[in-house]
Length: 113
Image 1 (tube, rainbow, N blue to C red):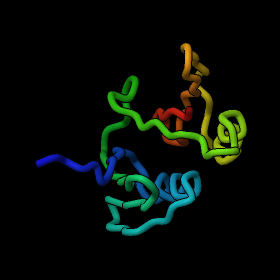
Image 2: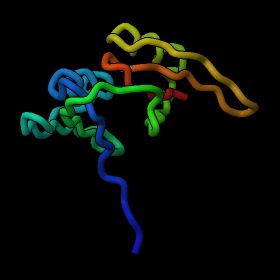
Image 3: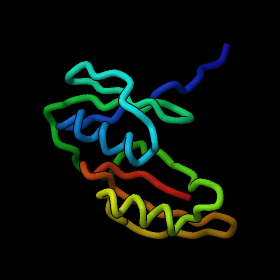
Image 4: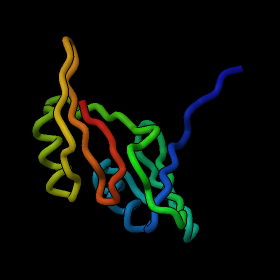
């Protein structure tokens, strides 16, 4: 028996607002809206946005990594996400891998490579 990843859930203050942003960023759609929990259907895994009372503190303990679409390129994808409201945290490179760390409008970090 093996587990399959089906959704990554993000705690946030405004689930509808953040879900709309991610749906636009990923070319996905809001599949379910339960008020305090909103699901965005995107490939390869759905993202859930769950209302919590606490504000985020410190660095994310888990973050999502995304691959830039073929033909688009890393810099073009970063520019597109920044235009949507993301902010760049930093650019990194090791032999064979280059990536950019960004934050969504709620401050959640994610990577694009």
